Image 1 (spheres, rainbow, N blue to C red):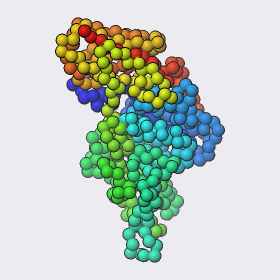
Image 2 (tube, helix red, strand yellow):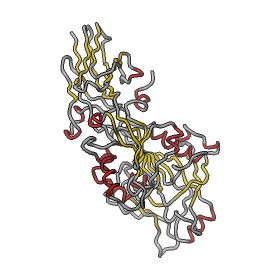
Image 3 (cartoon, rainbow, N blue to C red):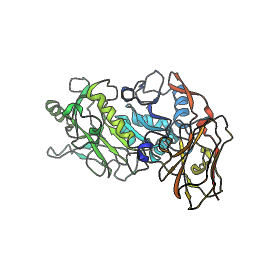
Image 4 (tube, helix red, strand yellow):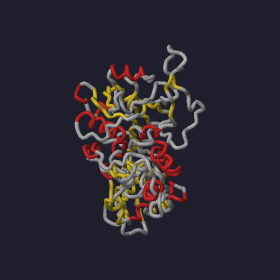
Length: 446
């Protein structure tokens, strides 16, 4: 039998990926790696304008999408009960602090909730900076020519930069002037794949475990230091810069970047999502090892989504009313969203007879499925019993069942339609599912 974790990565999400190309980030529309992998994804991108300026139109759109609105109380990233609606979010490069400020504290908290509840996060350049607790500097004492570069301790008190997310619970460091080379040209670095990098599960990078000429624009790195390396961090990739260009950097008073950590991953526990960060910009590549780099980062993040949680253990004859709204702040009793599963358990005693599982909802035009499985989550494709008839109301009857622990799943198959606009996708159709479909679940036996 396929494990519940494997099915959690396939089922129970509206789509695979949400791309944040919002205010003060690169207004990226296309995402080649997502297309290459066949991922279902949506994008919010600020309307064409100077990407470092904020317009009223962008503010209204981004607030509605990332923060929420009357028809979608907690925004597109979260289900009504606070579970992740997408498997992962990808955050583009740009201006981390300004983007974080534009999200507002509510929008930032929604991304934190997304990761805490099991959604994964990938960020490049600004997307990696904003994921962290803040930025440290890496400098040396100018008065001591023999001094080594050291982390200066901007956040030595353990505080977090207000505009940042903290989903990676340590700080990042800037690559310091690695935006243009000595002659003013764009910077590209090689990337070395760490010997035991989990990214090698997906691609062998030409067999030499090396990625050539990856665009870099002042992005991040982390040192193997308590300030910038959270316990449990996995090193994925390292920088490799040409020796003569390293020498030019040193001559200008900067530090070598070769062998510094370029990409890393962190996952707090089995229920949280995986955070995967890189200081470089491979996301626009359309072929070769650089496309494979972005694709591998995405796949490792998606493989790290959290294990689902059980809403409750149902009791004989007692109805469980899942009718509350997001604003009620009671996720254990909150409605179900589009393409979402709610999971329950029930212990069937030995000798139980005439067992009935009943699902009812006042939203009779919406399609709710009912599933059952023994000793494991009842995702549809591994359920022992299921009812996928159209409509919301279901009833499954059994003369008897094997005694022991049974999982019951409720799945909402009704979802929204989308239309393409000048800022990404807009929802139409069954908009009621964005705030959730109410239902009641009950199990009875004699």
